[in-house]
Length: 136
Image (cartoon, rainbow, N blue to C red; front, top):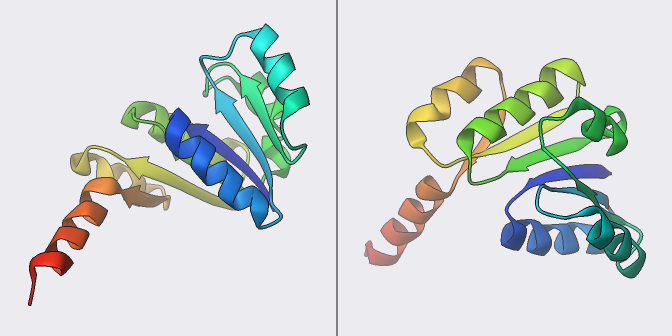
């Protein structure tokens, strides 16, 4: 599968390497990477993982990343507004079959529900873990 990941560095790096080991092709958006590092980085890493520098909501960059061929897009930044915008673009403009977004503010879940976008809420996951640990 071809998976585009838009997100925070630690989670993105860990997730991309795990997904790549399962045979997936990965493209990561990296807003902070300058062009020199971008060129060097792509030559050093596994060919199945590449990075695209730039803003996550830039249509030209999304096309450069191959969004029109993506099977999955993961919007997992720490900014709910970016996640919402990218998820909607992927779903509505580019018809990506599976779009998953991370929700940091639980009050924004209803926005995703309206557009049939799958979500992950770390707050909900952490709550469930703590409940399972403390319950008899």
